[in-house]
Image (cartoon, rainbow, N blue to C red; front, side, top):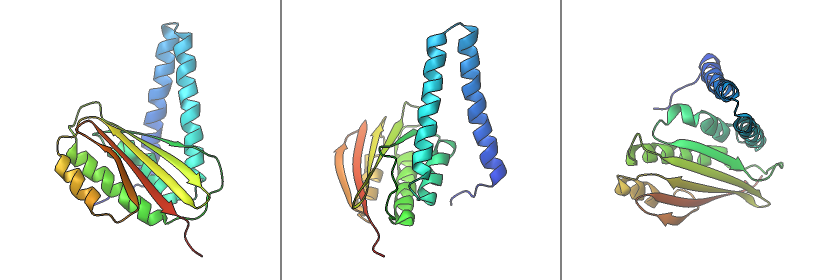
Length: 178
């Protein structure tokens, strides 16, 4: 069952994230680590740019899923990158969101909690659709659960690598015919 987020909850989580970032900057300023402060600010700017590009893809369900993912998926840290800042063609937002949400659930169940588990999603808009690259590194303790999920083949998917510590997938969503 997916949690429904109201605006107050979203703002509370967002405010908490921003306060953490400001405390990181303040702490490094107090320690006179100016280079680290600049690095943290650069990271914040890059993250904001990717949020903007994600919002511009006109995939509101998918964007919302990624934006709230680190609040909902405690077993792994998500990072994402949108490669091009362009107007993308319309794809099936619901299909990619449902698949990704189910993938997140499977991943949460299959990995070792409290470890260094990271998932990176690279989003590459193309002329005929959007290509998504999912790269996980961490500890997969229930490989069979992931294998069962991936075998359902409800979407155009290529498994690039799959081991106990890495999973690399490529997903393609074509443009919707009008």
